[in-house]
Length: 260
Image (cartoon, rainbow, N blue to C red; front, side):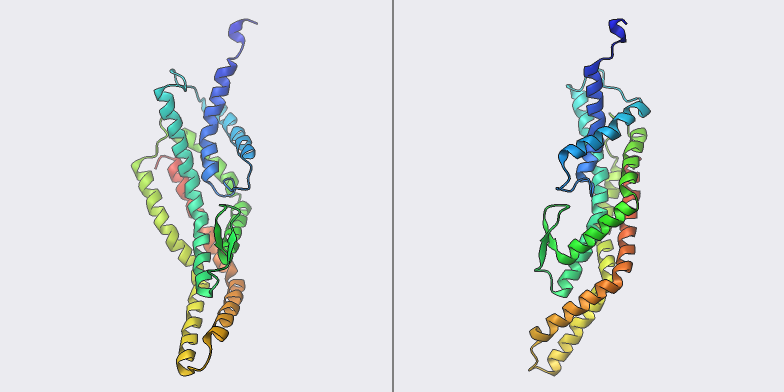
């Protein structure tokens, strides 16, 4: 064996590190993988497991000047940007469920009942936490995590390292998609929120017809009871809305990975 036959271990490690950047950035921003309770070591292992086969499948090579250079710097920035864009789009799909839960909580009078969201570490309402957990379960049941990995791997064909900056069309699509997620959140909350608004109107009419009635003693328990019953009845309809929002998020992620 000659020295020329010995593989360059340093170049191979740099190549693996380069291949880990895009999936690692996507996993930081994506739902489930980006949860605060997911260890960083696990994300690194998954990013390495995705990156190493990608190196062999796409024939990825290091820039001629090396990673520690101006072209290498822009290459790394491009990998980070495209990975974050793919993961952030999926995170917006999951956020639609959280927006719907916040709307329902405010209509029920549970806006003060906040819980720690294990996905983001921030405080969210009780109903928002329930719908967020439901969205996570739907995402995993539909193999959304595997679809995300497939999207990341396919993105190397359309956006190879060195040319991985999203196009203006892709950036505009992400902005428009973000506005649509607010509409999707209200659509998810519509089956319960509309009836709760009717309950509030009925309580207002009763309050005008019987001024001596203490609405705080009657209206809040009635609204809470109606909200709990309606959530139980309308959960299948809300699950369909959440699944639709996640499907649209995956489609938008594919568009971003294809270069817009």
